[in-house]
Length: 351
Image (cartoon, rainbow, N blue to C red):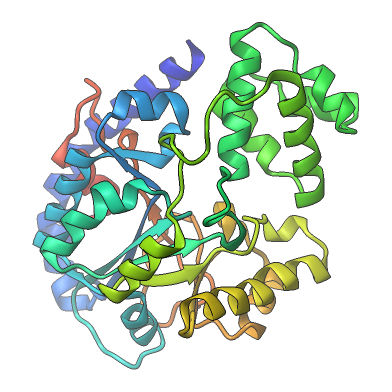
């Protein structure tokens, strides 16, 4: 109930703000024309593109799913208002190697879900739009879900059956105060996000303890949370899709010690390049979290760019290893009625 009230509040704000934004856009356009303010780089982030949005929002974090129809509308809006470029071109622009006087946009996907191939790629291919997919190496072709998806299903199963999470989390070695903080709200996805925001070793203990406690009930290879396999990725690369790195195990880098962070970034890049047979130049911080130390690790691994989940518009001169990214979902472009709104989408994309 609290989550629904919160969503309604956010939708009300977006719906109210959209016409005001439209009214200001004419004046902003004149200002941009004379100030050079349209030299902007939007990097858009997606995870899932799905046919059945209701089912997807039950299984996956609603902030990670968008319907095929809404994704098509996003692409049309982007194409009508921006030049769509690759991440290689984004790097050239922010480094000052290419001057622009307009808005450009790059399209990115995290995690490599199979529904990219089924629902997103057909639209992108028809429109001939460049796209980058950031892959967590160890999960691809391994027949298992990513930890944040495992945790969502496990927490949901426990809550659905009225089971206390204290038992499995205590068995995983978490202290009582920590458990209270991690499970303070009866919200499956909020709890799963907090549990995922643990160092790798502790996160794995939590996953195993929860699996022993409640089980999963879903095959990783056949469900809507399934990932691409290497054959499909090879085909996508052949068709022009850019592959970026996303660590080996989807590690939240600021939480890891130095050796682990370096292994996840540098060795992950080596593994991915060995599998693809080509250089991997672009990186996405898992969950978007980064700090000065992790940026140095990424720099030393010789990546040209790294994207966050900070909803920032990039400008020429921006740090290419801390690029803002606007992450989009079905919910992010809904109006107060819960329907897709072009006006809200424009507000979200600032176009």
